[in-house]
Length: 306
Image (tube, rainbow, N blue to C red; front, side):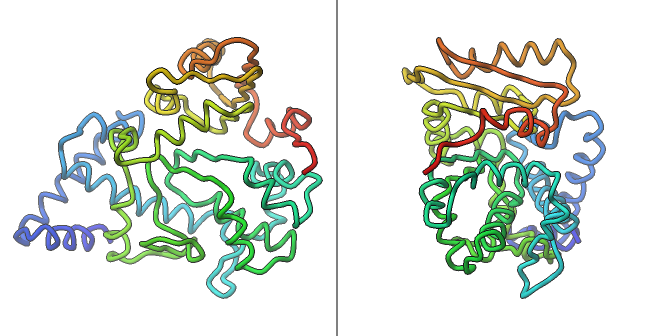
């Protein structure tokens, strides 16, 4: 599969066919280095300027993310090409817990206003959150697919490092159906939507300024499955002279499986890096999964009636 994509890349770059070998060599370099790397993102950042490494990594990311979406519990049986989830299988996941927070005491008439109070910053490349919300609105409230898509335009979802394309119901190109198995041409086109660390932190090439503003303004910030890599935490930090000005601010975070020492370090780093000042609460748990955090802080996360 990727060899076919490499041929497309070489042709697009007007390279000689023999130059496909250079893509193969770059891919092998990435593959052999991965056991030593913190992540593929870190590896690419440490080799910034090597365009072949960057391109091959983005192609591989697209292929692996789409493969994971295809195998995901969120992908239900094909029904009009929508692959709507089987919600009974999601009952104990953090998606289901999030849904109860999003919709608590909320009728369909109030849903648009409720959704506007949330901002999601998704550091992964997948579209799982969007896919889940789109089908959840239809399943729970009995709305049409068009109404669900319209409601989701009220939700702010940022992917600072890009994603694997727009879903069928979303505006923008290129598009890729959640759960579909891609062909080489699709992978080739979708790779342009993946960003490196450097690109994600570039205000001229990303929505980083808006992300930082939203984090600074929020009363409650929840970190789910966030690895707390320095680059990612600093990406959220306010820039320049802007300082969060909230009378009360709460941070909730999972650090599942991390050591006590690292958990304490993260607890200290969050307010320091994000420049929070007085009247704040920071709770970092290395014994809670994402789903368990919603159970632990059910009352804290509960929203007032619309």
